[in-house]
Image (tube, rainbow over all chains, first blue to last red; front, side, top):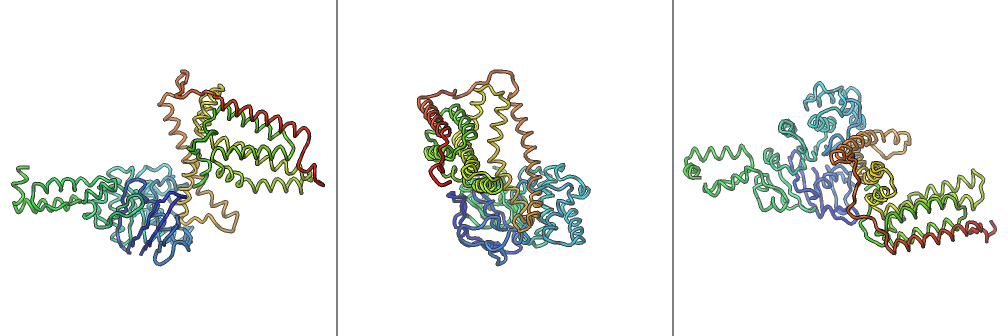
Length: 281
Length: 250
């Protein structure tokens, strides 16, 4: 469990995080959302001790991050940063994945096994001996994820995983996250991609100017257009569509996810209740 | 943040608003002066002069940070010259003070002059525009490269890389995962910047114009004359070989 208690953080006089209180339980899937400068990345850097609180405490499985090194905490919390090319330095994909395993002291046999597993898991087969710098953007992003998943951390944090990714890569990423969820991993994503969050429906934490302004289910938070506007985000298209339909169909819920929307619409059409309204619409 | 003191501050002071041509000429003259003078007193006058100017420029904190950063080298140069080189106390002090005066001159110039002003000045002195621009870009990219290094360090530390530790050789070897991405990203960025400049007509063979042409004011002349008079005084003191130690047993 990651517990954040009264966390305050500032760079010199610039206050970035203001009194953050948050608990992330094991196996949870969480999205931290907000506009640029909301403090999302600063917050996740506290999870593995890259940043230490100015006031308050961050506890990872009971370990106070102020008292442990980044290397020790990283074994529990794996962070995949936004720009994967910033971490590559090895000659081959295989070596790149193995780097962290060496740092964490895994024996050679186990290292080889883990590298092989993670390559298959992240669809990197056939690229083992390629230079990380010659991979495409999507492959680099998957390699960055592979580098972290290799040591099997309990908590996985993804910083803007969909930024600059095409539709196909997003699909792959969605599958990978679903796979991690099936393995009961705690997954935390930092993003302002509302459509991606609406599709995966995690617990949503909304941030604005260093403060948490909402914490709830994806349906609750993403469908609250006033809150979304306050956080500088545009609600998902399905939510806007549901809102429009609500005017025509009595009691039509405000949904954010396309499959939920289709199910509900199908239900209404089957009942015939909303059909006449839809026709007139 | 790394190299924070190298970020050009937005503070507007009389020193900031001086004509960059005057600042560059004064800086070059004082750099030459600090290389040729050989008395402790002359160097102390130069350091105090630029410290006072940093107070006027509201950048005294950054200036002190620059000076304290090189202070270990000041001690090292002094000890090496005095104990190993067998030089006199006063000459050993001069060699180490020279470092401080050079740092003070450079710091004040870069703390109060924007890269654009430097480029304009170089253009004025007929330095080829591409060279002036390269110089400007090199200065401008220091803060962003520093930010990049910090991000790379974060990423590698998150992969279990220990940058601290007692073993010096191991610490040096651990810098490799930081240096390789920095070099690769810098090359990539330089190619991108070159392309961006080319598509914006950098290589066109036309006379470049400027939005705000440089114009010397009364205060610029006063600044120059003041420094020129002080220069004569410093040279005179140096010629007289007056040092702090003339009056002591040393």
